[in-house]
Length: 238
Image 1 (cartoon, rainbow, N blue to C red):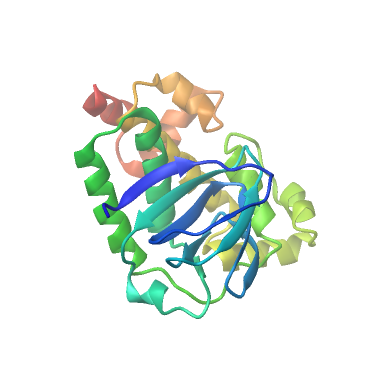
Image 2: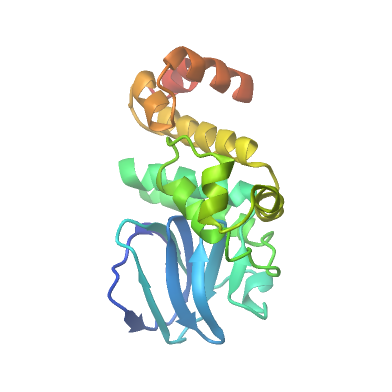
């Protein structure tokens, strides 16, 4: 079979099936409730699940949730031999997922699909397969990724996680490798760069989509983060 990447959503109705290839489901926002092998729980942003060939699985999700789904004939050994089907996603792969979402939403070609699959499978080999995310952080990441333009605060997200502020800060950093402010900046800047370089969305609209009402503030932040202004990537796209 040819390896393939797609962006999908599911329904709240519980479904079940199996397939004769590996399937990886990686949340872009929201989470999926899934039962496969010995695992029965939620897989959210920052995680992925590897479903082995011919393995019956049951699943459902909120329809607004979106996922990158990879259908592969083989997967790296770190996934095929892991004790759990759930694995953590590193920041480079998380960034690639956002890029894949933009690409598959706005354009498609066989050459593009092949290049994305090659990079995706290369990054898969570096994914850790132990220490799942703290289950209390899963709804927090889902909330952030469902609306990256919102003014997410530590206090509000700590309530979502049912934690005190101090504990939440530590658990969030443990889960993502960075504090909330750094995480939001990275998420927004990566999304902005993908939109600028892969679509014809105007800069002012890109700024709004990633939470900046003032395009000048967005331009300063973007330039500081990447070393080039937004128009540099927009010009390349044009």
